[in-house]
Length: 131
Image 1 (cartoon, rainbow, N blue to C red):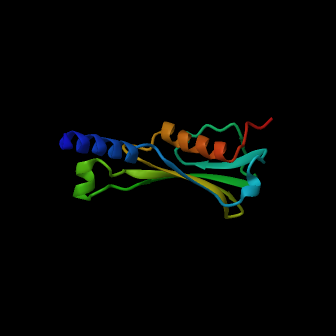
Image 2 (cartoon, rainbow, N blue to C red):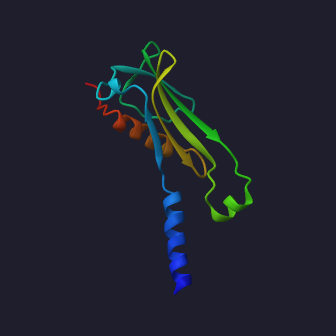
Image 3 (cartoon, rainbow, N blue to C red):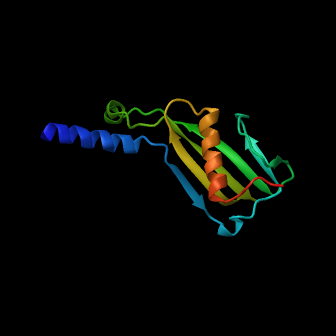
């Protein structure tokens, strides 16, 4: 009975640790619900889909950054809790951070994961599709 309870709690704990949790920080709340007409989107992967016009002269700069980090901790690797890197999307105005969202990932930082983080940030900012 104790072994079953321990196994059940372990599975629930590990399942909670492996969910795609996105850390979001909004440094300038006055941008909430005030979408721009255009963004300068810097996405080296070229996979991000945005409804905002991509304009190199836009005041707001959206940067997509992926970081790969290979976990070498034997305990983390054996439990499967180690992540392979993170995706961070930062929104800036004149080098000042307005908002950012970040998510750890396992495997490769594919287009779907990048889009997921972007969509979450846009939702948190309450930016609907521009007219």
